[in-house]
Length: 286
Image (cartoon, rainbow, N blue to C red):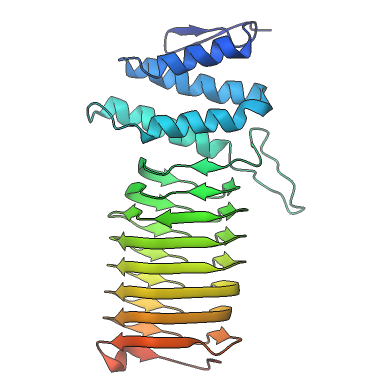
């Protein structure tokens, strides 16, 4: 059996050395002035988590903390380090469940809280990831973000999050507990179609600069939109919800609620349409 590994020219003995020695060495190398050494440290942390399950949450927190640090300089090399950290995190959060609901990814780490608050993420891809509690407060997403098919088993918080240019996709995502999207400017398309909210969902103080797609979402408890500005087209077609409220909303462009079904009468307070002909209701049960 191989007794050690070399990453980027840096020697790490992850088999014979006790966990704490390899772990501390990797943490120290995250501060190296050489990008390949930092990449090596990120990879070693991922390997250590695979070997020591009880340390996985701590390792994820260290990788998140690295992403939270403001880089000393914007370089392509540092971008590669950060991309590697994002990839390591996402790889260990994807269960790849089969038709029986069983995780088939041997590198999947279950029951992980993901706190990426205050980080800057480029082309973030958390598609098909399974997260216990997710905190993305004050996170900056650059170049788009992908949460397609992601599952949040606990709470999901996106407060003061910056969704910059690019598509931001939550298509088919499942929110098992309460979720918050507050004080956000979506500079790119916001795609939530076919997402499932099993508890309360709060969308407040939002600006949608591009398409807002909520078609086909399912809400088991309630969903609330308050103080939102839709500057482009919005779709709520085929929505199924126990309860929905729209308070202080402005639609500047076409909006559709075709075939939407809300069990309790929805609450509409100060909803303003700039073009009354832009509304579309067809066969809805509002």
